[in-house]
Length: 577
Image 1 (cartoon, rainbow, N blue to C red):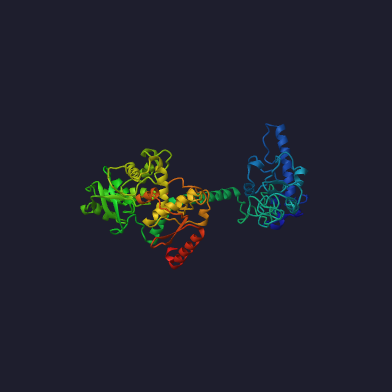
Image 2 (tube, rainbow, N blue to C red):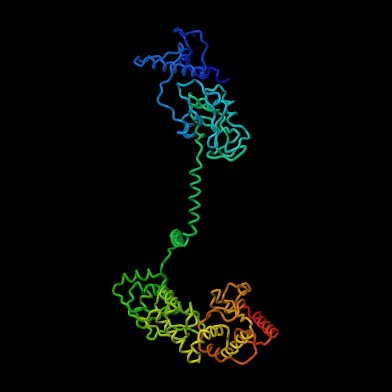
């Protein structure tokens, strides 16, 4: 075996006497050999261990004796090296750390230096696997390095170790990495397989591995641990998951940074004197922050902060309650100048609500024109019981009479709503509607208001719906379906929307009138419900969207002819499709 060679005679420099002195070859004092054969490194190490054991026994028998300058042993043999401390147990040192130190880390029992010269036979023959790597056997087990390497990496083993050797996978102790190998995935290391070099011993691992280096070469770095890598992956995943929720917050800042890089500065203010007309109202007691918020809600200025900063730089500015005719998308400076100009003061400001307007559009008008906050208006609309409506009414929809209402800076949202409800009650009473019938008439009229075109057709449309109710037919109104989907500005629907039974306003799927009004009807619609036309019509369709011409039919076949006429009109007017 390679261990029986006198390596010092091969690689050491100097004369024979120097080499013999270094290797411990016995001499008789004359520089000649004493007759003993040169000892191999392994034999020298075994002799030192025996010498150390004998010395320890002598010290126990003679505790007061002064230590000898040269410990007893075989003649001419160097004494054991002075012990610095007890080697750490295998569980206390990570394999990679031990490999760097040049020693062998055993996963089982580590024998004391003075207890025995060699390890037990069982330890020598059975490689121990720890954390997915095969640990080599000890250096003093009498097994050649090559044999130890083969025993440490059996092909076909299961688990995380690899059965293949790797020229670059050996450390000082011969343990391999935990990467993928011949028979399974690995663990911590970047490469699979046990190292070729076997385990190092007391020689510091100078013969461990193929390279014979006294320490791991530069490219044999300790295997990296998976823990930090997995933690990094988890952190990245959390960051990506959070990115979706944080986009709304970060997008403006990112946009600003990109603008700065590109040289284009993102401003918080419009430029110029504005575009379309808009009326805003300053209420009694409003301060600068309130005025700035009103201007932003109405679309006059881009941000309230830009306008408010301008106010802070103009402490002499004062506002007078009232309504002002301004424009949308004005610069803060232009808006402030317009508010100081008496010519823009509206003496009789008003809030105009057209027939058929939905509740959500009325709320928006109160915010943009009456100087009210969105939160205040929404809260007032939800407090349905505060307006004296019939029991069972759950929404203000339908009960806000379409008309022109004066804007009063000192009014609250509830005061505006109350004025609209009171007006509706007055109109119902004027139309001869009994209080017990008011709710049904409002619901019915809201449907007629959305479906009818020309004023002359309102009573006919009301009659069609009444005939269908009397015959037990469903109303099949697209306007009710659209309202149930949240679309209050059209009566166009899709097949899927008409087939959706979960929409409680879907009169294609549910009998009778819708559960609540779908718009706020005016006088014409209310009168049409109270004074319906006479006829047997069950169908109607508008055949000309420009003129509002509507065809009423008694039978379904007649209705199909009218529908084809409407389709022909649409083909001739693609801009309406």
